[in-house]
Length: 105
Image (cartoon, rainbow, N blue to C red):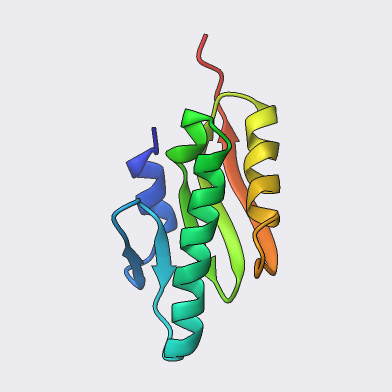
């Protein structure tokens, strides 16, 4: 469900994508990068644990402990649920919710 055209416009060449479609920004500080990778895994698991298929398809970007959520969800409830699930993960310093609500009528 991720819109690859919109995602491409948002991301720079400095991003690396993992197998889940999640993104980690390269930084010279390897220790911070490892912490972000671990945090990305925890946030991705938290989104999956909600049980909503739309939340499993979201892109997760982490930079310095700040989580950025990208993608589309069918309603505002799921947008808020995704934000809350990510916020509950220990180590998250902030959330930027870039999710778009798209109704499928």
